[in-house]
Amino acid sequence: MTERPPSAARPTSPETGEDGIDLSIVIPAYNEERRIVPTLNAIAAYLARTATKAEILVVDDGSADGTAARVRELAAAIPGLRLLSNGRNRGKGFSIRHGFSESHAPLVLLTDADLSTPIEEIEKLTPALRDGKAGVAVGSRALAPELVEVRQGRLRQTMGKCFNLVVRTLTGLSIRDTQCGFKLIDRRRLTPVFALARIDHFSYDVEILYLAQRRGIRIAEIPVIWRNSPNSRVGILGDPLRMFIDVVRIVVRDRAGRYREPS
Image 1 (cartoon, rainbow, N blue to C red):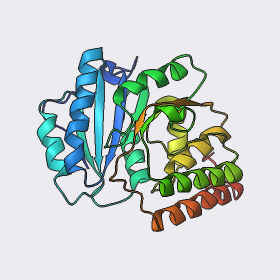
Image 2: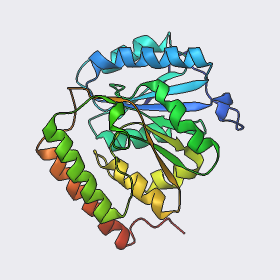
Image 3: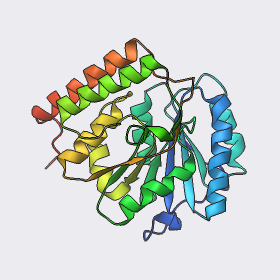
Image 4: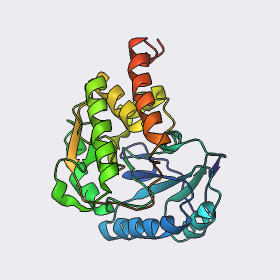
């Protein structure tokens, strides 16, 4: 289900993006009533300040609070803002794929609803894609720890490092921070990757990056500012186990030939 405000223009021109749109911003949201409004206002202010023509796609993942209502209210004032609905809770990975499938611009920014990485940091990622060398630019908390202005607790930091070690060992990815929720993507080059992706939950990042690497698409990892939000949606117990299992599934599926594109 896609909700469009009456004033939202439907993209039409194929050159820089349909209707001349330069950027699509995809924001997965699950029970984000309190954080989504300041996030959208900050993004809208940045787009207006930089004269960037963009669409903002908020993907409501079956929220039980007023997330959808808040987005609808803001849609009348923020150009290009659209609400997409999963209908029920499907997971962050599913939401990302849903938003990506509805995007129209050449560049697609994936960012979290809490905007832990300020929207201005996109200016660090854009050059990596503009020169045509990389298909994905990944924001990283690991490359420049001094840019992490508000850190996670020690337990979460340790869990993150252990997970990254598992990812690097099993997949061969050299990325030191696959889980930062701030990524800029070349939509044309990554569309086949997203069509093959299946992970619905928090390891979706690993699957996308792994499949991109397998296709020979360069991935640029770039240090960004990051401020931890205390209201993380990743649980301490169940989610890390599921993420580990999903990484194993990614490798097993690939070796079994289940990521092959239809002939």
